[in-house]
Image (cartoon, rainbow, N blue to C red; front, top):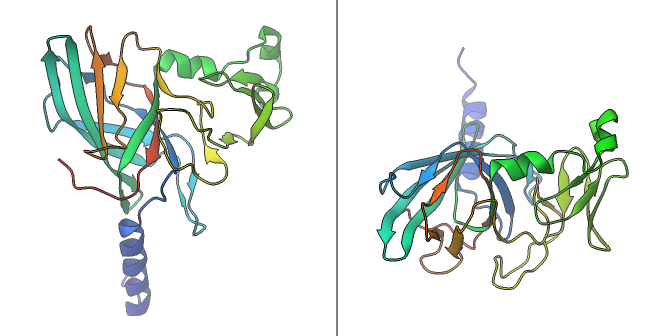
Length: 245
């Protein structure tokens, strides 16, 4: 069946607009990787794949859907005098037929075990309750009281829970973003002050991707630099898309 010419043109223009649309600076993108990163084996150009773990609303009323495909690539994987080093870059996000260029920095990385634990109740007695009533603990320490719909960081209320965690990102010294986003963000399993690496021994973020070369994340470890599939990444949109390297 042929589409009416005007309607087909509308769909084409809409797709083109969304494909060219940049994600607003400071937008949080919670992602889990299906790829394993291994500085001993990976080669420059090797593909990195993952998916978005929570809907991300945009200022124009649209949203990037949970499950959207995230693509990136390995820039460098080398053995150094002090261990191993890996550079990588996230290039684009695919939401259905829409392709959005990515230029992001990383604020926090966590292992799959920590993600699993963040979905469990902190009180063993809660296991007999509906999961909508559980009290859980985010990576970084925030407490989510699902029954009351509240998210607390220390003594402060920082967001709410409605099927997922929405909270206001906290500024952390030497951790992106430098310009804080407005309003609540899609935090998934991360706390508002989560920063750095959780669950991976001796792995460090030595370049978050918010400085030149913008968008390029560099990890180092004095031992094998291996990040298994299922890892979680709290990505932050930088100011403008950059060309892939």
